[in-house]
Amino acid sequence: MAKQVQDAYIVAATRTAVGKAPRGAFRSTRPDSMLAHVLASVLKQVPAIEASRIEDAIVGCAMPEYEQGMNVARIGVLLAGLPNSVAGMTVNRFCSSGLNAVSIAADRIRTGEADIMIAAGTESMSMIPMLGRLALNEAVFERGENVGIAYGMGLTAEKVAAQWKVTREAQDAFALASHQKALAAQAAGEFDAEITPITLEEDAPDLATEKVVTRSRIVARDEGPRADTSAEGLARLKPVFAAKGSVTAGNSSQMSDGAGASILVSERVLRELNLAPLARWVGFAVAGVAPEIMGVGPIAAIPKVVKTTGIGLDRIDWIELNEAFAAQALAVMQDLGLDPAKVNPLGGAIALGHPLGATGAIRTATITHGLRRRKQKYGMVSMCVGTGMGAAGIFEAM
Image (cartoon, rainbow, N blue to C red):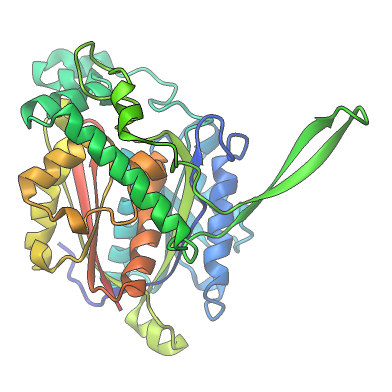
């Protein structure tokens, strides 16, 4: 195990707004273009850092193929206009890819291998299907305990709901609260500091002139939160994964498009450039669980990161627990005894969306800005991961 020689600090963090897939604002925007936008934007936030000093860009992407293939990290670096000297590596651990990118970048700094790194994530669920375009190797099912890998995510949520006895009413109430918190946060401007608006240009026919015209618009607001969400409306939705189940489109995360990026530096660079950090990276953990109950991955990962960092749950002020499904989020909260007041205070993926491999990078921007704004000390980003894993990372506001 490499010896930690220095801390890693986040000095800038930004993200796009999150668009709804497949018909939202970013339906025609390539994932490498979204990535290039946040890479260029996060660099502008720290003028003292010369782009040529960045040693690597680690980018999470859950389905790194087709439009987000070809090592999308390196493509994004080049599209953003960074020098050829800046390398790029794409990381895939499904839903925790963006958080893993932060962890890898931080570890390069903490072990003394680097001083300035970029961590990011990008995902277009409009362009790439949730399971990608490739078939799973059937040999994996030669071991019966692996059959859960073939289950759709929704079916794993049904199994979690049954095993942890999470009712339909509780799931719908959790989903409604997610939308209500997200809408309140938008109205209060709580996402403004973390979102870098993106200008989109689209060609469309002008029927009056019978010509194709180019129109531009600025996207600066998450598309997912719905003011018309109600308990009655959620209750009317039918289960979509099991005939007699409880998981619906309303209490599940949304398919989404988006990107996020952060700059991490060593303490040596902080002093040299007189930078004010947003947060210190404290630590990270991953853990595995049975594939058929993949949603409870944080139950295994969170205690692990708490143990390795020495930061107890009672000291965590803010927990970004990705809401893949209300059922799994509630099961995790129930099992670990998490304080509901600390979990997703600005809403979660049910309202804000979940662009898979980008989510960890996006929520890093949310929690690093949010902790400082609310004058809180420790925050955690955690999520379940497809095929049966969980991940969790801890941040300390500076």
